[in-house]
Image (tube, rainbow over all chains, first blue to last red; front, side):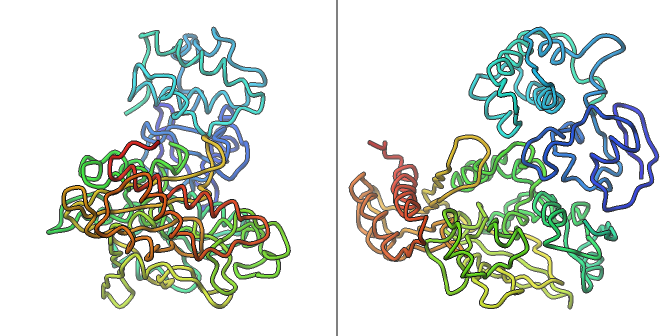
Length: 158
Length: 320
């Protein structure tokens, strides 16, 4: 199958029963996408499939055939972080960091559709992205901060 | 998870020919992949129907609105056609958390998903009445039928049933049939029987929701505001003449092995104006026949309140 990952076309061959998450982490070494629960409950494995957030642990790899995927590794441009990544750093929004790739990708897709979300819209959008450190207050602050900065979009979105 | 073969047909006909013994339909995969990982389902082949163009889209079709089987929950909740006529469906779809699941999960998948009963999900069967009665049962049925004490997990089913919708099914012989949503769900009487009227070699192709519009709403009660399954829902559709109800359709969700029609409550409301008082009485009538298990009497109250609030929302009456 052919998949565009972070703007680069990949020819992949994989058994049909493997989740997209395993292919990203094990075959392509893109370990920024995290395995949390494996059953779609925690959103740590969120990636953008054709620009929309999905849980890669519940996505059979073959469903990505012909599609475009953005992982956390695809957000920065060279050494310059994506504005959402920078906002999460500036707001010190991570403790262990495990949920953060999923949080950031969900935020990127939120801001594409809703550039100036209310707090209620942020909470609704991140509903289901679990943070085991319970750092939700700072995560909310990071999303607010990201919405206030205007530079930088999603480099590889279609 | 056992190995399986993956098939990627582009027409319904091709998909049906691939649905031989041991094959299952894959659409959003949000429920199916969990079932595979828990080894509750062990298909030999998955037939992906997401690339069949004829199964997508929402459109007007005569007096109906046609919703394609593989329309995602996000597409449903964002559709102007649906938002204008069926707030009940939008409310039911938005109750399905979270955004990721709504981007993946499909309308037909919501109807066809398996129950969340933890005895079923841990490989102890769907109809294990003694485990349910003697074990943890706080999320089980208050309207159980025989050994079927699980609750239907569908969020759209109760709303579609109250709206009088029909499921269109294509079979292996090339024939199609229309099944009212009320008959699509059934309580199985033997282990291995499905809880929906869909054979293994059939595919749901469309859902037809009749116009003209009613005043309709869905109200969901869950344990917490964030990501969770509903504890009880009520979906209502009212036909009105001025402020008086001429006919009412009320369906409870997540309280029985199928969506539960509240016919007594429906009858009571005919000729009435929807007020906090009449809505409250309809709620009480809707749960009058409930038979809670040892740990779930609280769901009776939740279902009652859900009916009251759905009625008030549909009629545009401010709750007090």
